[in-house]
Image (cartoon, rainbow, N blue to C red; front, side):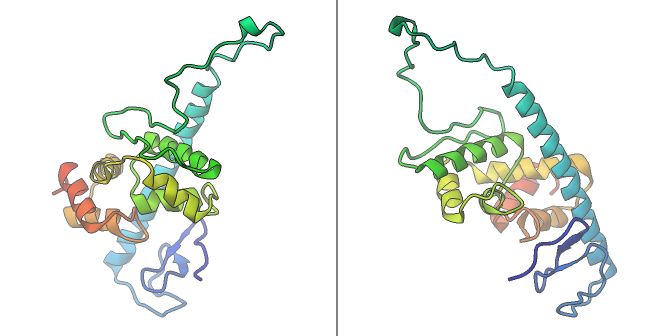
Length: 212
């Protein structure tokens, strides 16, 4: 199994082993890369780092906002003082309604870990665009949330997500950082080392973001 790339490394597009961002030859499979391929790789890596920093900032803001939520009332011995739970409360996660993402649970039969993974998925979708494969990988990878792959998959599939619109969100985020050609943005959105959208989703995203 290929090793995980370090901070200044990326996965070789041929053998998937980690190589330096500016490597012209893969030391593992000996693949030779053109100057354009190296430049594109460095550009994509820089954009991914910039997006990651933005996600961290959003996470910090989210934590700060949550800390301001009204605390529950203190415990009391008088049963009449205990608040009654709302009958409309839903046991399953729901995404914050935004113009870009509206993820809603499709099933109520999730296990505890799957329900937690679904909550995490909704939080990620509230920060930025994710493909189905990218979101599952974020939830299950050691560098991400560390959920079991099966639980992460069940959680993501329990949400009602428009993956075409997610691709458009991701495309707009990339264009906010730097310029992209139509083909370059589609490649970034659909590649295994990029966002992992399907080709049709990537094409939809690039077109609706105005790159094509």
